[in-house]
Amino acid sequence: MEKKIINTTSAPAPIGPYNQAVQFGNTLFISGQIALDPATGELVQGDVQAEARQVMKNLAAILSAAGMDFSNVLKSSIFLMDMGQFAQVNEVYGSYFGDDAPARETIQVAGLPKGVKVEISMVAAK
Image (cartoon, rainbow, N blue to C red; front, top):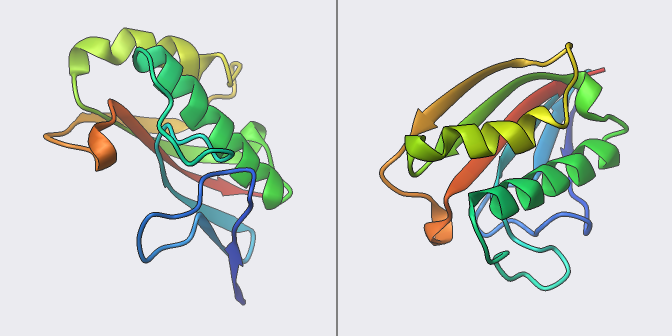
């Protein structure tokens, strides 16, 4: 199997030494995404739901670049600055999945890049 780097201008450019995603065989590993607008490179301003919506848009763009969509997602990791915002993020996140939702964990962390409220990474497969 060959490792393939996935990058798209429809999602924010990496802000460090990593790629948006790496595909190995049929499995796609998507790096954590934050609420950066790919058109401007600026953080989306607003509440945690506004951030979560942009994060999901960024993830959708990366999945699409790999020929996939949310139905291909096997596992998600959600990192929150405040577990008290779990319900708001869950509402946005859940709107992208039906009854076929992936496995997931949600973790409260001490800090996230650029001071954002939420970051999400995913593993998907064809």
